[in-house]
Image (cartoon, rainbow, N blue to C red; front, top):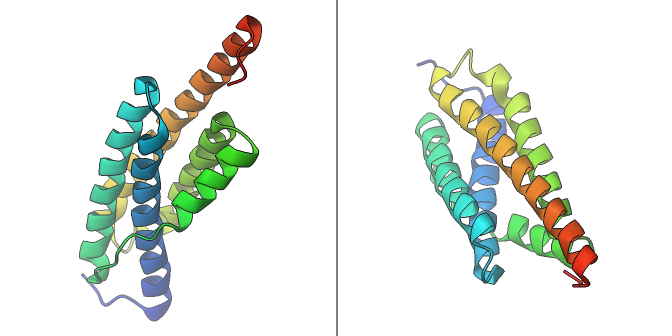
Length: 147
């Protein structure tokens, strides 16, 4: 593999950090979802997939980074001020856009192709979680619950 340009390295490191932060955020969200197995299991799986994706990008960059709680804090704020459905909507769109943005690097770094594919699958799955959250809200409204 050829030497990574400074510009590419900066973008790939930023991507690697995003993957780690998103994985941490998904894992963190499951802590407050008592009795919501329908959301917990997929989020735990996606978290593990995102950590695996970050390791793949790490092989390309050669840099080891650590997850921060930035995305987790943003997620908690979204739930607090909006809803879980809105959080899943934002997450899905962000992950999908992230995959689309980084597709240009596959030509020079073919090892990241599985990461792109994984992000697209995760985005679709999170979109389905959004639909489930939306249906739950409608049901709760109908029967008189606030959540």
